[in-house]
Length: 285
Length: 213
Image 1 (cartoon, rainbow over the protein chains, first blue to last red):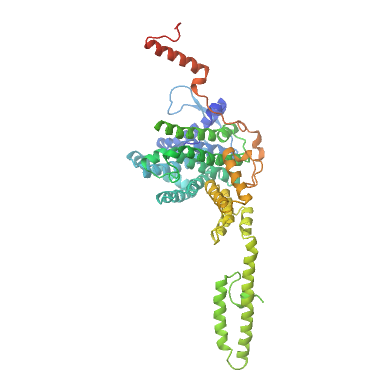
Image 2: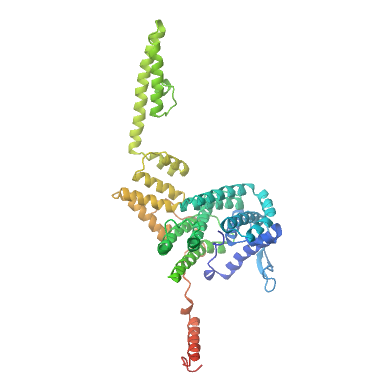
């Protein structure tokens, strides 16, 4: 479900890209320190976006350092964020999300790999849960709601996306520690966007494997083009709502990378996913 | 005197509650009215009061229906205007009729909740059941346009009532049109490579495309 948020790298200033990646690396380092090496696999750019917002809400300008990445131990050092209380909180959030994602994978695909990872992560998860009890409770509630909707073959895209959107709202609330309309709108639409784009991206696979997908009720192999068109419409509106909410936010920290993600990254990802959807359709013909 | 108090029901009771209360009270006092002396006279007076209250309460309920018959969705509209979307949804859920107007208001509620897919469906239903209503048609068009081009490019925004503002205007990357990545082969570099590649292939097969290499 995660990993769809991205920057539009070809249309991004190099300094903005390095700054963006610095948030990612800083989070990964913090995760390694507070939750162990395994938790580092859970790091993704979705949560980095929320981290950027959280820094803006707290008005904490991050400090940067140059350090080696664990995946690239040799070579040039990378710019990354020095750990701060906000990053620690984001790491807590990330740990909880990683745990639920694993659970999701286990129910979806099963597999020993995920079960093992879950067992290894469960102690860390308890620590994160203790730090953010509300987030965990809400996530569990909406996650179960989404599951039961899926199991009862409820194909109402909006109410399914609603569950994930409300989880994202909770994440936003937990990372920033604040609540306002802009943040709510932004996070709600972000979660909605992630759910829809994930469903679009998985459509062919789910169709083939006869798995649940909210689009399976209305679309089939033959109506991929229509699905692409409709999905584009839904996603455009959702992106637009995010833009409006973002326009009204007070953004002073790392504005460049953040604006690139919001104004260009979402649209670029939509294009990419839709191309893939249509491309595969052509291949099979 | 408040007819609802006389009938011993809560303010805003439904017609059937009033009917039940009226029947019960009437039966009770009808018995007593034949009692001798003061008690019988009191019961007679009470009966008259009950009749009066019953008529009045029924009238009030019919009136309230008639008022909202014109603006049946006034409450819903108010709730939407106050951004009390959950309450608006409850009001809609409790309504018996599901006419085109209901679909229209449901669409607005869905839109406000960001449930765009359902909003479109409801608007389509509204247009289908009342094709002559320009308001429904315009709203549907507006929503579909917003989905195609993004709501920001839509200056009217009457259906949405929200417009982008604030300090976002000056941000980086904001007004850049989304750019498509150019296909690899059309760049000068790609063309050269393509030619060289073709030349190699030709040479393999015994021919030659670029004679000098």
